[in-house]
Amino acid sequence: MTTRKPPPAGGELSDQRTERQPEAAIGVRLRSLRRQRGFTLEQVASSAGLTRGFLSHLERGVTSASIGSLYRISDALGIDVAALFEPSGADLSRQNSRKPSFFGGEGVTDYVVSPAAEKRVQVCETHIAPQGTPDRNLYSHDGEVSIVYVLQGELEVRFADDMILLGPGDGLTCSPAQPHSWRNPSLGDEAIVMWVMLPAQF
Image 1 (spheres, rainbow, N blue to C red):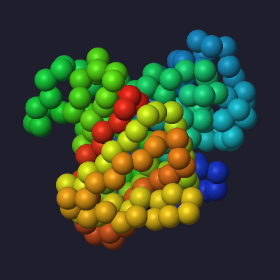
Image 2: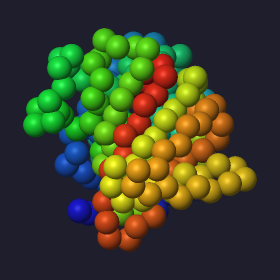
Image 3: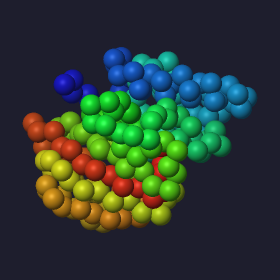
Image 4: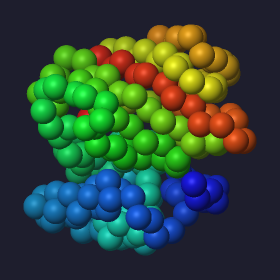
């Protein structure tokens, strides 16, 4: 697995070409939604606290964004963040037929277990590469509750004034409105966790 360099300040990730198709798909939808609403790159970038160059690279699929940046972009466009992602498909979710999704960050791959039509709750199995994180900065978003359960490896959950390390079998419940982030602290082992979010976010 390719190791990405740390992102520059402001939540933007490094400008790197990638073969991950979900990232490129986000860029295509982002450009389409921006143009539909008549916004320029400069307008959206300024409102989201990002640079025009970063947003341009994101739309062209040659860089990735942190989850916090995606929330800020969706707010700037006046849309729900879910509009940036493909629906997961059929209601029946079998392990061998799930397609990976990319919801932002570095080294994080999500498999949506719950059906796309279910908006009350969303369940994701998240595979996190060593040092993988959705955002190097703390972020928050709307929602009632988020629950994480560690299936494999370790998960480090950060808050403004606290850090909690979870191991296999550990679970944590928190408010998504509280600034937070998380990462796989291991230098060599993948972590796998299950997220339950109420209501559905993506």
